[in-house]
Image (cartoon, rainbow, N blue to C red):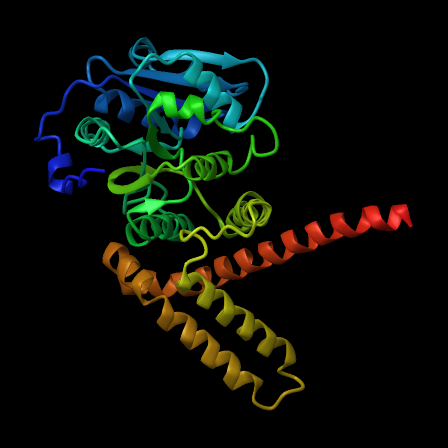
Length: 352
């Protein structure tokens, strides 16, 4: 394969051949963020690009409430009932005619040059098959939890390598012939959770490469509270991702099982065990404190990112949030293992 071009060659100042992009934005009751997402996509699109809103049975009138000028700039396809994130994106793809498929979430407003950067990335490298971008470093919701959660994602996509073993439909692009040859996004088990991650595994197994290009970015407007973070990270990420990892022969994704994340999980587990035995063990308190200090030190790169984005006080406020997020991830893995063991044991009990 030829060498990848330098990032500077991917700037809008370097004109690229006119590859036609098909931008697919899935929509489900997205009224709070859809206008910003569509407005940004329309502003970033070239004259030959198309933007497809795939409405997944919305009941809040979010598509109809868009500015008429925005509606005139897009194509709308609709499922009368909610069918899930994988199937609704596939429905959008069925209506596409472009040479590159682009997926953007309805709570993401892409940066003005994002689509041109994608166009140039594919035009200047005929061997490039798929790429994913990143959230930017100024999340749309001002809350501390939202800022932390989205900046953590930003940090991960900027520090975990130039390629990924999963696809990401938050901001991602792929050649349509490859998307179709791989079978599209799952419509069954993974139709509602991790449909893009599972699809990426199929791409990797087929011998393709998924490039990580964090300079292709957008603002994420999703609002997180502590409660919603726990629910999202446990039910929609940690548990299903652990099941997917275990089902694929314990496939390790460096974006979620990096050495730093493994060490962080071990230190959090040690701290929790020390806390539990503190009434019975003389030195448990010192062990817990040492584990927390080690956790802070091993995540130094994250604190630098948070400090650069929002200052040292904000970074300090994020330490307990990151402890919680790490504990949720570890607990989700334990739950998934327990569920798989239970399913393996119950049939034998029924047989007995």
